Image 1 (cartoon, chains in turn green, cyan):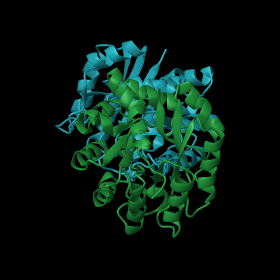
Image 2 (cartoon, chains in turn blue, orange):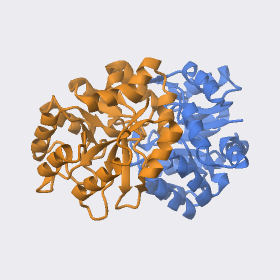
Image 3 (cartoon, one colour):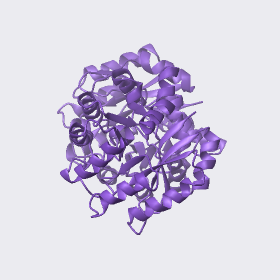
Length: 248
Length: 246
């Protein structure tokens, strides 16, 4: 079984990325991915935001295949209410933050407010990380340290040049996890497991742009034992999702 | 036949290393017949010495390894080093790393080197996508000044896991037909596929960047790409051969 903990569906003109569910599903089939956590490229700003409704509609159409996260702009006045609707009413399972997309400091008060709200639901916070300012692991770590009750997943393991920094930070902050999406180094998955522990490494593809089949192969190349692969491919994220609550 | 257009040999100042035996063994496993090899920047920082060492390694498999001279444009002997690489060491390409050698790729200082490349009809491989020094539109300025020199941008021309560098690469390639990309570590596989669709498969080359990147994984990037068989052949074989043989 494979659960992809980081995938996208959206029609995002500003990015030039048009990936409806019909693009992602056959690539999941090709990669033998059973379920995917899906989120938009756009950042929701309020309840009933078109981005959130797009995910909600897709989850309703394909409930066996998709699990929803809300991608939200914490700077928007309606951000917390948007999270409440997504997790409380729509039963979504987590939030995605992409500080480069909405331009906001990960440790800024607006972002912390949203992270705290997610933590109240036991909902994971999937943070884009990479090699540029606003997405640096040190910046996201500051946020994670200020909300220790939140479960913060660092997508892409810090990108191309910040993987080691992510692992150093993860050693210091037990509420940090990582996903395997897009990071181009198979061996870094092994290193993440050895450094952080098997429970804190999640398979993610960042598909469909990042080819899910290729992302699966990356995990296969990491030299994991079967039981480790099972943890990374589905058991860890399944455990996290089971702990999400939908009422406060 | 598969041609890997960018691998490294030797030991880098940062400790990364690859032996010739390990490279050839890995190529055998993956059925990669040929590779364009660049030297790592050694702890001595002496690139001319590194090129000389690389030439000795190529003699171990001269039918499989093709040399790319790594040149430091700041070095007073850079032009002589490049000429020597082509005339004495029999290298076929030049590799510039603006990040590790600390220069902007669009500096006028590169003009004498580009003249040599034009004379020898040799391609230039640029470590591209590095902030401040080799972003795609900076490489494009060099390409515009030297339209007869084929310039291959490593890493798809952009190292940005947000995807924010891709539009610049597309713009650069649209403006300068002598610009190419290699595929190592490219964020979003569909960027490779869209580049093939937009500009033609002849503008994209399989380059693994091994051992910085994992050659086993990088060849999968090509094997799993949603392109036609003919396009795949161009990516992994014909384009490299054409650039080298020209």
